[in-house]
Length: 350
Image (cartoon, rainbow, N blue to C red; front, side, top):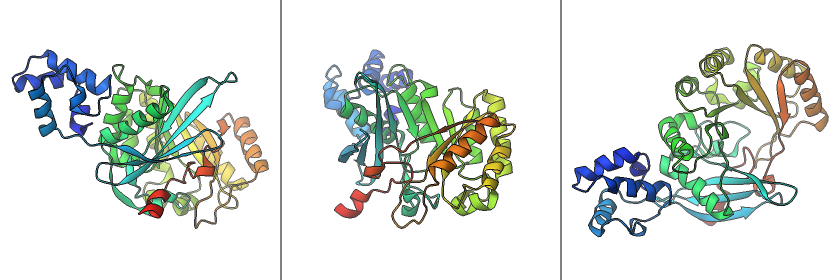
């Protein structure tokens, strides 16, 4: 769908079409085709006059996103290579959770917000690719639509944790999330939509002012400044003390807790001093910690911490009153887990 049209609400579409000389109700019809039916061509919009469809096609050319490749993990996770209208590729992951009776309990889609990523985190394959360009709101929404169509099941959760730093593409990301949240479209609850950032302070402050209750996740990975700087060099100029103050402002303004993503990496950030630093950082914050094993990335020597270490960390954090969980990686056998998205298909098929 055209990026400008998808961001217009029904009143704005009606205003556009009345300025072209069409009755106001045509805006409602167009809105339904875009948001309820997810039309992928103006020719599908059968109740709109032919001349209107032709003008829409001329003024607002469609930008197609399609699935170029699909891999299915043994755990049911599906990783998609999405080809954008200009030939660039991004990766998207669909993660189903099934009940014991085999029915789908929820379907989470991990979307990308940029082609590549400028953050250069040492544990992440995407960062090694560098940044090519930002995605549009329509391209972000298209990822969710295509996964939903493939599963033939409603998407219940969205996490902006794929390729890219969403707060460096703030306006397009928020516009996409509003479409996903809209009751006339995907109607995914705001609290079931999570934005993950490396800790861009301006983005955190801006998100605190939004009316929607989107969930904020922060890739922390160390509460020791020099260790975090080594792992995440592009946020070294936004130090931990300022990050904590920003998160305190966020929770005070919104009343919502923050989730921390923490990859446990053997002999890098999994020592006793690292644990005590994390406990200290969490004091005075409304937060939850997701511990994760670091995933294998080509050319990286980083290894996951032991299970015993993870269990010790969970026990100690919970004793300190810090809500903590350990999240198993999904789709690691198809390079679809956290930190692994790097468009291998593009490298081997071009």
